[in-house]
Image (tube, rainbow, N blue to C red; front, side, top):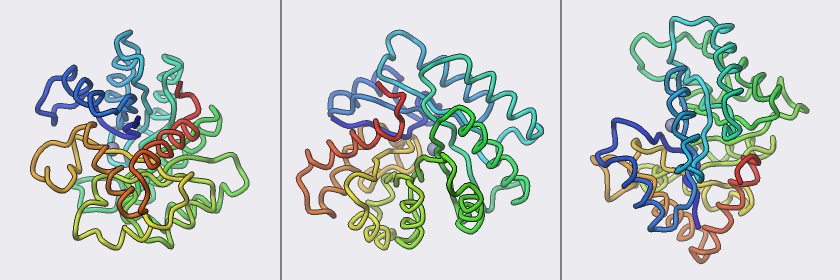
Length: 262
Ligand SMILES: [Zn+2]
């Protein structure tokens, strides 16, 4: 069995209806999904989705992406997260949150991104929840914040990990888990395979980040939670382990880090 540890169901970017997405995933052994909120409105949407009785095996994380809800102050965002947290026991983490240095049009400054990220770290600590980190070109900022919280109960996942083994080791040293997406199947991302090969078996997760980041063979199409199997197959191939063993480890690791999953 597998868990897609990070996807954006429901989302307009998919080209199938939600019920078929879930059915197709479960038909290849993906029995649980963690759906990710990225803004105040998306957080409300994912919470409504996971509390539906037919979605017993779907859980969510709520957070503010570095460039979402630009018109809100840090305090307003904190209050929005706090009130959303009261709505469901199926919220298993805070995030995705973090640092995104890219050519995003009209995004937040690095300074403001750090403030919003740190507020979410604090919310996660206050609620004893793990965080899901989005990090695009923000290694320095993420690590500086980590140093500040060293010795705290800060824990979580480096989502869609795309950095070097050196960076992976820093996450691992802090007790974080490394989550691999379809990116590990891209020929241009070959250097990533060093981390896939070296990450301990009890410290990695698999995810799709669908509808984004389709694996090789499906590029140019929407990605789907069922393709998390392709990610796990790639991990198995690189680690030279049987697929079932890799699937079992990723399942167990996901349940360990998101300890409210059941
Ligand atoms: Zn995502």
